[in-house]
Length: 140
Image (cartoon, rainbow, N blue to C red; front, top):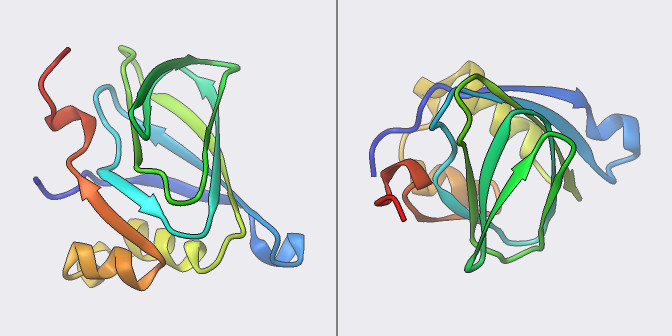
């Protein structure tokens, strides 16, 4: 698996604003970009496509989601996504419960040199790496 791209993720609603129930983030992805396949052990993740078109893999289901659409990832499901549009795409996503996801994204975005071993970094934040991003998979 290649090193991850530089992520453009910011916290929109912190867990402190929701009494620890959820956190909301914005992610901007260039065409073809997205995270590696991964699993949130104990969290639901809800993605809202704000701009562009994304391809989501949730479990074994591959789906295309356009602006205004939603993709829901239950705990324990392998998932990933990529921007399949020709311009930067924008997602808003909620993580319930947030756990330590704010620290995860802060380190990933602002201190990538502190990530070290990528699988161990994911593990320390309640997640498991499960494979390469969709950009490294052959076209279907």
